[in-house]
Every structure is written in structure tokens, then in C-alpha cells.
Length: 254
Image 1 (tube, rainbow, N blue to C red):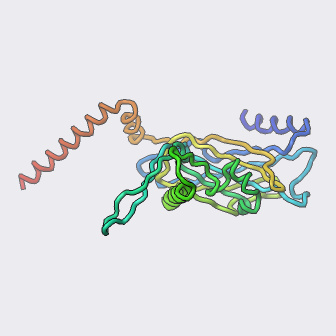
Image 2: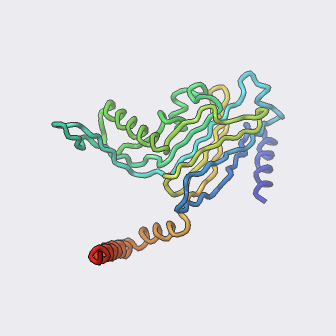
Image 3: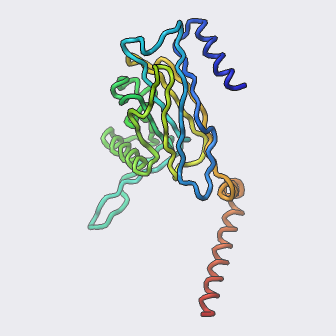
């Protein structure tokens, strides 16, 4: 059984004198999006297994937990608007090869109090440490401005956010956190990463997959658009013509 494997693996590592081990899980491994989908809430929970009977609470510096939920990366082009002669027009633009479609981070304390800038950059802990991978070179000032603009846009749409203090740790062993999934979340394979931090160092990390997909009629339409794009396009045009003609016929009868 899966739960038995989760228990046996950490215990085997402890017998070898390994570092603390995380045993994480999520409340939902699969989230299905229907036409009435208004969002979901993920519960991420687990335990910290310490070697030699050690406990985080017995240390001068207790263990902290950071949980990161990421959506599939996607290519995106960001345009900057500029007002010219009283009219807003597209000016500069920048394309990103791989920006996370969704990013949420919850921590037991503010991340800046847990690790230094270098560690945050390595593990991408926090919105200011995301690796956005721009496709075109730009001077640092312009790059920083576009990075901040992309993060701000997705933060306002609920796709990027931080929740310091949202992780609860009980007796230095059990932890739990809740992550809100907005209604506009993209579909695809997500990951829930859990990091165990003490004394400014990441001692352990674990990942659990999460699948978000459309269901019902929405899934049928999405699959048709992806697998049979030409037929899907012709059908959409035909339906538009049919509905337009029907509306015109009804209007003429009046």
C-alpha cells in the first residue's frame, strides 16, 4: 500500500543516519474543472521524520517549512503600453520562454527571515526569486521592469501569490498549509514542493504531482481544439454562421 511505502522509506533512511526526511501529501492529486468551477483549496500536509530521535523543538533553531505549488511553464509575450498624443499604444515588448503559469508559496515564517538571497534564488523561493527565462536580451533596468510587470499582472489575477505564516507546524513534526486555486487556473501538471529549513539551510525537500484538467463538455472541446484543430475551426465558423442566420431570420419575422 502507498501509505506503507511512505513510512518504510523514511525509516530505512533513518537507520543509515540520514538527515531529516519529509513525508508530504496533498488532499487532492487531481482537480477537475467543470463549467461551474469557481476555484479549489488544496491542503498540503505531512510529517518531518528526524534521525536518532532528534526533534526540531529540541534545537535552538526550530525547523521551518516552505511549500511551493507551481503550474506548468509557458511561453508568454509581455507588451508595455505607452501614451503617445493621448492614445495608449503598445511600445516595448519582451518574450519569456518559460514562465510558471501558476505560482504560490506558503511558509511558516517570512522567507526572507529563513534563508539568504542565494538560497532563495537556487530553490526559487518567493516571487522575487522566480527564474523567468527571457528569450531576448535587455539591459538590467528594462529586464527588471518587465519582470516586475509580469509578476504584478499575475498576482492581480490570483495566479501568483505569497502566504507567509500560512504553514502550521505542530510539535515540530506535523505540518499543514492551505493553497487556494483560482477559477482561472490553467490546466496541466502541477507540482507541490515542500522544503525543510533550519539554520538558513535547506535540509530536505520532497515533491508531489498534482493534475488539473478539464472535465465533461469543457474537456471534450479542449481535446477537439488540440487534436483536430482544422475540423474544430471549421465547426466553430459553421456554428457562428448558423447562429447569425438564425438570429437574422427571427428578427425579420418580427
